[in-house]
Each structure stands twice: as C-alpha cells, then as structure tokens.
Length: 134
Image (cartoon, rainbow, N blue to C red):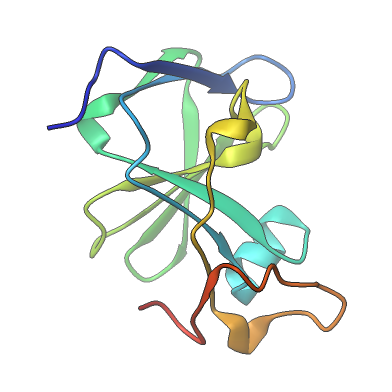
C-alpha cells in the first residue's frame, strides 16, 4: 500500500490550474511518441504516473482534448500548459513531470516509443528502452 500522506503539488504556467498528488508516483518515464512531441512541442515528455484517486485539482479546471481514440490529454485552457494524459486502457493518470512544483520527484525508469525518437535527442543508456509501450 502506498503512503498517501506524501503530498506533491503542481500546476500550469499561469497558475490558473493547481493540483495535488497524494502518495509516491506509480511510475516515471520519457515518452518519445509523435503525439507527445506535438502536444508538448518538444522531442519527448517526462510523465509521472499517479493513481486517479490520488490526483486532485485544487484550483481552476483542466480542459480535456481527445487527441486519439481512447486518449484524453489535459491542459490549462488559459495558458495551454500540458498537464495530464489518460487513456481508456490505462489504470493511472500521467502527469507532466515539469508541471510539478518539484519535478525532481520524477525518477524516470525508461524511454518508450523510441521508434519515434528524434535524432538530436541523446538517451540516458542506464534507462530501459522500448520501441513501443511495453
């Protein structure tokens, strides 16, 4: 059982949306898929997983966009900051590590969708590597 007394906070760039995560992240990893690249505007994104019951919006409201079948990406409707990822086949919510007040809690374990990796991205060879999702 995860210790939910641990609390991590985060939010968007403009401060309109704030959230709290209770407990330790369930996973953390870098995603190189084209959808994430386009949604974030970068070569990859670092996600932190959290059990949905441990994720709470404390200020404002997340705006959602269905970016592909069964996938919902959450962002701030005011400043556009990417905040969350949820899929019909996912048990956890992905939260953008950079939107956390302390992004250092992310301890990435893997790189996924390396078949979409940009040639200018340098990988940490100590992390697990997957061409797709494991």
